[in-house]
View 1 (cartoon, protein in one colour):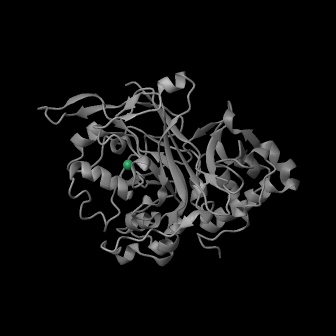
View 2: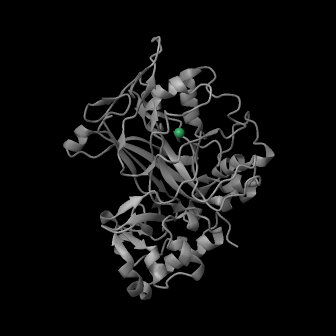
View 3: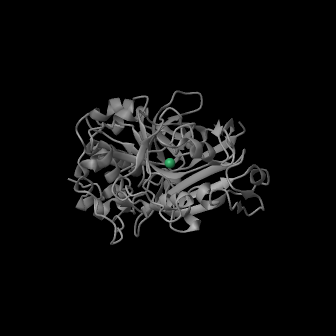
Amino acid sequence: MTRWWETDETHDPALTSWVASAQGHGDFPIQNLPLGLFAPPGQEARIGVAIGDMILDLAACAHAGLLDEALVAPACATTVNALLALPSHQRRALRHRLSISLSTSHHRAQVEPHLHVAADCTLHVPARIGDYTDFYVGIHHANNVGRQFRPDNPLLPNYKYVPIGYHGRASSIRASGVPLRRPSGQRKAPQADAPTYGPTERLDYELELGVWVGPGNALGHPIPIAQAADHVAGFCLLNDWSARDFQAWEYQPLGPFLAKNFQSTISPWIVTAEAMAPFRLPQPARPDDDPAPLPYLHDADDQQHGALALTLEACLLTTKMRDAGEAPTRLSVGPATSMYWTIHQMIAHHTSNGCDLNPGDLLGTGTLSAPTRDGFGSMMELSVGGTAPITLPNGETRAFIADGDEIILRATASAPGRVAIGLGECRAMVMAS
Ligand code: CA
């Protein structure tokens, strides 16, 4: 049986597709095959697979008899939840079928009628997200933010024992491209006697990796870390929009609430765990002085393969830049190896008390910042809490995000001798309140 980090013929770098735009595509060559929910112009949403600049209608393929019987019902559903619920061997079987259909020219006549031009289609949040949990595993982000409050002791004592997280809000998650309205809320300046209600003055983004939960567990039955991989269906980008002024005022004693739940943006394609098999890395060793993870959070295979060879990037496009026809400017670029805890440790910990995860639940890693400034994943870090605004190439400055600004997240997985794949774009523009 293929293990979660092992590759097969679907990852072969020599594999090409008869869909011409797949060759050399930055995100969606045939080695990727992500799942999503798309609507062709004037039509209902249905499940699709991104290939180059096209989308393959999976439901139409099922109706045409091109999928195994067991996959027909999940492929024809109105969300991807039933596909995510499949055991990993069935997800793998679907991937093999798609890979063969899109690479072998004698399938072309049957499959090609079910392709749509991606640029003409609308992409939706792919799953009915039952629950969304946001973690805090980006250690450089935790250090940077903690240092602003506690210069001498940025990490709280639990950080190296517990994958810190909180329950977020699933209802306000939107797909890339949906603008967000600047939220209003309570904010109180440090010297003010009382808070006022109004639009946030410290709107921020957070560059995160999203994790789509697969089959999940029954209530009361923790997922052992050695089995956690079976429950990771795939990955996306996540922008956890944050209102820092609301956050500073409301977060004690129970943590994030209205500072976080007004909207979150995800990239709409689910890049499957199977597609990421070639892009696995050992989890970086902990410093010698750090405690070892408790036994329920330790697994040798996870330590050997649990990190991801992903490069994450955040870009900004301001109104002035857009009007001048300029390209977005990069705010940061850095590796996803800045996670102190692996995704499997997040899953094992989340379920360790018996809490049930369900297919289509979404987990966020927390902001993934690199150790150095060129890889900081939020404005709060780049502008040092707003005290040191950054200057953009056109001379504009930003301490936080302005109306009309668009934040664009991207991520590419790469490894020597492999065809790189991407997660697709996660972008959203801020509208005035
Ligand atoms: Ca977050």
